[in-house]
Length: 105
Image (cartoon, rainbow, N blue to C red; front, top):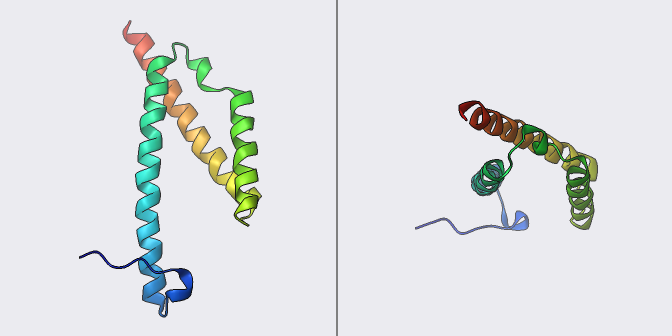
């Protein structure tokens, strides 16, 4: 039987907190894997490696992330840093997939 999810206030020990953080980390990995599926599909749709970097789209995403972070009372600079790292990783992945596909043609 799965452990009951505890709110931060319900955590009474360091182990309680660590267990909840571990649970959330697993959820984050699952979400990143789901997101990567869409990035992989985008790489299949795009035909030129230069399409992987879309400055206007990236800045629109960053603007949304910063606003959402503020709504949740999170540090928007830290959220931006995380998302820029994620986006850089995705752009490089897309470029690699598209370039590899083009070289096989």
